[in-house]
Length: 484
Image 1: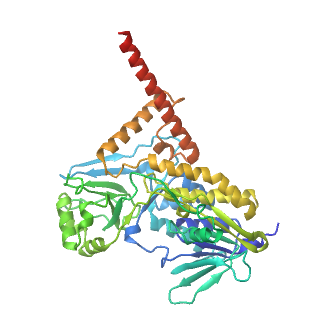
Image 2: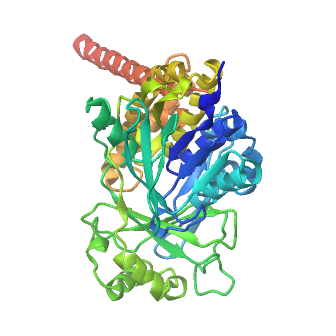
């Protein structure tokens, strides 16, 4: 087979998906891979995007293939050692260990997003520089049919203070997130707007607003000398406020590096009082009143208060996906065309409720790799097969986001309790009648051996069997009443 087409790849987006895809292709023997990334560097710190990832068994399918799971583990806190300390408004603390309910669940690893991106980039620098180049401070400004061959696409990029540079690749990977220019271009060129238009679905967590508060490493938890936070400990710090529009919590996930600044997530409805505060003085006073158990002046600098005040923050997206995952123009195998594939948030995006944002993106890449292996890297054969295989999982994933754990942000205590009742009921029925009931889908998601479609199928079966059980119970009660 002629593999000349394996020598010209453009990847739009240099996050985990883009760098992971570049490494996958390089390991498969592809060359001349260029990653386009707007950020200035792999380790660039963005306060309001300083998320933590839990790379579970699903995401580790790719890191295992790349041979970097051991390096991932060295940088991370394993979920088998996940401890959470809840600090109440009066300073009372309770530490619990996260239970591992699924014996098939592979050890997952917690680490900051920036640390994971840096891990992937360092792997490129150390082992694949001859095949991959990452262009930071560079933006894709346009994708259009090539002037000399309309069956090929031309990618036009522009870096800071430099002239535009164009590429004519055989393969384009859209790893550029929810506002993907690659997906937008496919919609415009193909004329099939519905195929590449995001279909949106409701969720109780969609639209929640968030900001991230940066705290010092090992910050003090009280005025007592030596009472410091632990980097590997997760914290939930409750406020003194009870009113729904004032009550707040600081959520901190664990970090391996004790010298790394901690990040506290603040997640509430957009009408919460904290978003109405317009000056650093107001914000500082709010935090002092909200968290009397903390030495606020010692752990939140005036500079961070100001940054937090004027930061726009972000909102959780609506669960959404598009039906079109690829498009082929011409014959890319003969260097007479361009194949385009969408991966990660560019094709499926949702709130972080079930921790599958990065894991589903990494699984996208791993499944694409498997199909490339099956088709001997023939893109015309591989891309339709990829869409047929992955489309069902993507639709199931979006539904799982809706029902998984959308009330975990304390936005509605009644709904959260109802969810908890449903969760423990399914868990109990699974233990009593494992042949009829599976655990709740939130637990099943952690089993990387199950596809999203299989998990949703089990969840739907649970619901159906619960309905039958409820009907039998009601019928039995009515019969008893009539008999008596």
